[in-house]
Image (cartoon, rainbow, N blue to C red):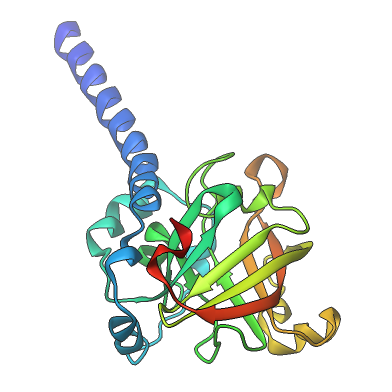
Length: 222
């Protein structure tokens, strides 16, 4: 009986470890793969005509349960753009609307009407671990660093000008009138959770100001 119970505990331990590993491996895999690289401008335009879904609860800390439940739903059907931050080696899809599967593969738009290079362009992403995948390294960004977003027709270049800590209910940070605080120039607002050891209920916004836009070239970031 003891032997059987011991085998049960070992098996359970392996399953739990495997689930935890999968919960970290899956977002790392998709973060490194960047599935937006194979999506054309035409497909991105088509994807933006689909139903917009927004579940702000999905922004909360990434969990093993949600990862295992949603990773099979990850595909290219929601991709409407790409975000590249060279200094932090970030290259991720921009997905249309906040859902669990969208946040597992990259970043997500937070308003149906937002446009690259116009007004405030807010994007949400998961914090996984220090210097980890997805939006984890957003915490490292400092003034002057560059953020690029593209729909593969135009590249929009932003420069980091501010970092703001808020609570999880600061929806005003997503609105276009936030540009009034930044010389009325178009901005990008990158949002992720605060580091869990500090306060996982808080949100960190990294604000970038639009400084340039130019035609897309596939070789630009290589």
